[in-house]
View (cartoon, rainbow, N blue to C red):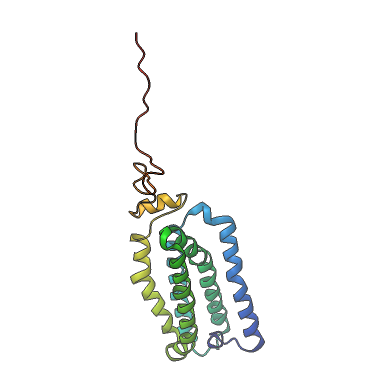
Length: 211
């Protein structure tokens, strides 16, 4: 990827090393100082918009620097690649794990999170790691527009219309927000095995005082 921008040899290794450190540092910053202040949905929406813009600009730069001979454009191209990983680490990187564990029903939370990690993260990442070098070789800067189109057509509308804010809500409140019953019919009746525990809606009764 960096060779396409004219960065080769030891410089390529140095840039790759810095790139691999940038994401985790941005991720740590978000988790420590930002996550619980701005919620879940906003970082995802702003993140996908910013990533899409960065990819469009990256494509525009690469289209003008196909052979990687323009140093200034190469530097700008690397800068936007860094922008993508930083933005991702300030949005999807940390928030997706939090949101996933919050919205999963308790009964399937363990299996659901394991499936999302194995398929949604590892399998998809492995696929793109294998495909991207060949796609970049064949399509060049046009390859980035595949992600741009997916973000605009699928990801952004899904985030806006299907995702709900879960900041500050308990797991039971999140279950109810998505239409599930967290603990029986809250708070009307909570029963376990023939009435070991029963909670009913009753008004306080006070003894009447005779005048």
